[in-house]
Amino acid sequence: MSKGEMSVSIVKIPYSRGFVDLEVKDTNLLGVLESKAHHFKTEDDQETIVRKALESPISSPRLKDLAKEKNNIVIITSDHTRPVPSKITLPILLEEIRSGNPTADITILIATGFHRLTTREEMINKFGEDIVNNEKLVNHDCWDDKNLVDVGILPSGGKLILNKLAMEADLLVAEGFIEPHFFAGFSGGRKSVLPGVASGTTVLANHCSKFIASEFARTGWLEGNPIHKDMLFAAEAANLAFILNVVIDADKKVINAFAGNRVLAHETGCKFVTELASVKSIPADIVITSNGGYPLDQNIYQAVKGMTAAEATANEDAVIIIAAACNDGHGGKAFYDTFVENPTPQSIMDKILQIPMESTIPDQWESQILARVLIKHKVILVTDQCDPQLVRDMKMIHAYTLDEALKMAYEIKGQNATVTVVPDGVSVIVL
Image 1 (cartoon, rainbow, N blue to C red):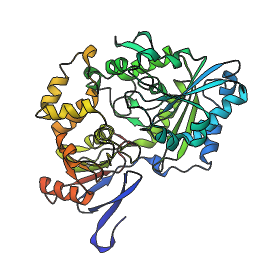
Image 2: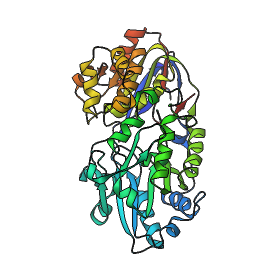
Image 3: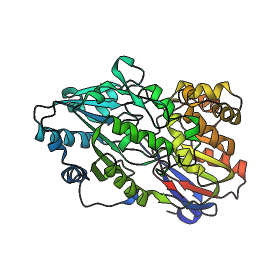
Image 4: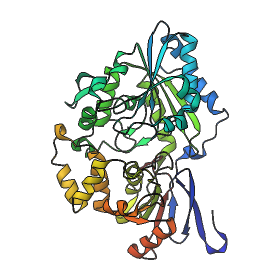
């Protein structure tokens, strides 16, 4: 909307647990790219949406029927870095399972993937005290060999090593959410298994430089995506029997849910997200975005996702501004060290492209994508919750506010520079 006679547009940008206002002169602003999911209206409340999905699963019996006579049931859930509304979904999932098998032994396995373990405080924040105090929750640890089992070889040739609890389950279920993903195409579905409950060795192979560099390993793209192919194989090998995946809006509220077959329910959800999230690129000299606010903007590692949305609608040599709290710092020591130890983004890229699959190093994929962005664009990271020197160490420019960042960008590109805004960079597929 406009700000009086100043002819200034104000756009709300997700940041941490709230929003910050961005003011852009209308003479500079070319457009605002937003997912229709943020304005999607549904008559049902969140609980009803989830229940309806479970009552009418896609290409699968109901979960309560699958649970009958199963003694050892494992539910894979997302960790503290993902905005899956588990306070809503998990109680309903547990109720559905127990309605079919009241005596089932249920373990909730937190899919940390390659991330650090989720703390008890973060569990309470995500799942609620009732679930944390009364259910069996286990953090997946991708380097804990005694709790991992060798399952076979991925289509890519990498070793498939998965969490033992998941592999020993009589019934393996997963909950998650579907949004565009910057190299897996979409989140959700098979991603609960790989990288969710895979070993570090398996994640490294799947995220190798060759795959990250693939033209098919892009936002909103599944067909021909080598990373997706490995993930599908892993989910099948783990015998993932049933999924519940939701779609959320800007307020992290459930607007749709898809349950049932691990492939078909996920693909149906991806089609729904594609219809809502696809936006036409409006190339500009300055592109402003975010990583969708908490919990996705907790660190620089995660914030790279939002940068790729800006990259997709940026002119050559454009300036990218991303607002991300990054209160948890860099998000990966190897990721940080790569930028500290190498002089330029190009030198980082040159090194990474020489690394074979079997020698992939931790966080290499994030370094590769950030380097790709920085080779083409200056990036200004807006945060008042992260050490500015840390931002500079990672070859970016620091700003405390959006106003400060935009002023810097105009100094670089000129006062007449064009501007495109992508308020939530992780929610869109830029075409």
